[in-house]
Image 1 (cartoon, rainbow, N blue to C red):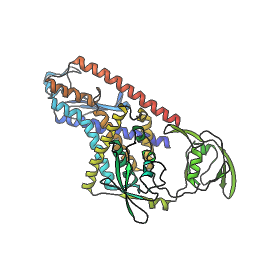
Image 2 (cartoon, rainbow, N blue to C red):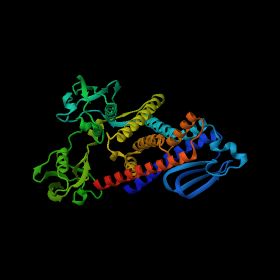
Image 3 (tube, one colour):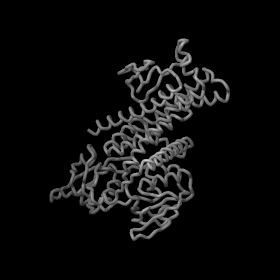
Image 4 (tube, rainbow, N blue to C red):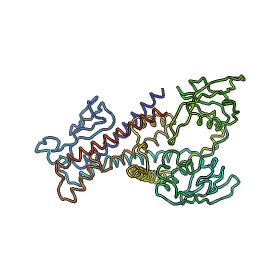
Length: 455
């Protein structure tokens, strides 16, 4: 069932993103008087096609779904009848061609704004920004943060959720801020101003759990070591654990809290552990080998189990914030802009070697995230779609031949030269672009496979 949800969520995401992107090209092409011959979702052999409209545009769903295209009347791609020359793409002014090509990425950004607008109006749920244990000898510890404090403001920005806090601190670190002011309030109602030092944050620190690396974590209520869920096929299920089991000892060491259990499991990847279980009032002995998982450059153990959660305690830590339509739109526009800028900054850090290329994800990882977000709920899935739509828009604007950004670069050169690039120069660029995109795809798929192997 999980696999089926993942496949359906992935296909739906691809369909929505591709249709919006290509419809941007299509709509502006029609406005500019260009005849559109084909609108295809996917590449390769057509599975379904139908001609519609006065121009008899062929609407196609093709076999290979990772992409799509709009084919326009163009003398560079085939013979054009004399009566149709005025409607050929290549005969249009450079401003029109620029607008048509840019419309695809712009459509992706508009889709992200629309999705965020819906989310911000309907209400965004998140964890309250309450601090958990502060890691010793970290920037957070040196700034005197205390467990139980609530973050209320970072710099000039109000903080409502833990996600807000993470995003604002990450943005400051990306911009190489030496330090940032953080306002907090204690459980007793006492306000404090902390100065968090970010001067030692490196590019590699931005990967994974950034807040943990600077010593901050979200507050978690104490939980008993009772199994509340099992991952299908995980080490816990294979070893005989059941939902409702209380783990009272690991290798003879008494366990009283869930976090103690997690620490013991993480420290023993691939090692045989003897667990003492309380099940139905009886003590049961189990021997389990935690799965080995890669995390932050090291190996950790995992059982594939989750705790039994007290919904009442969890609800106390949750908050839902909604905005009126105009405020929601303003916030959606800002969120899209900031995420786009953050994506560009991360790409640049990869290019200069400050951030690992292991962060590039391919279709397998995207499909996995699609499935997980869909299972978390409609709001999570919309947020996932918005994020991927922004990524697609940014990627397509990169000045790489074959991508929209490559064509836009050609048109800028045409404006400067006063004449189009030669066919030979464009063909050379296409070959370079194809090689670069192939290398990126190989890197992304390699990272996907490596993540699957490492768990």
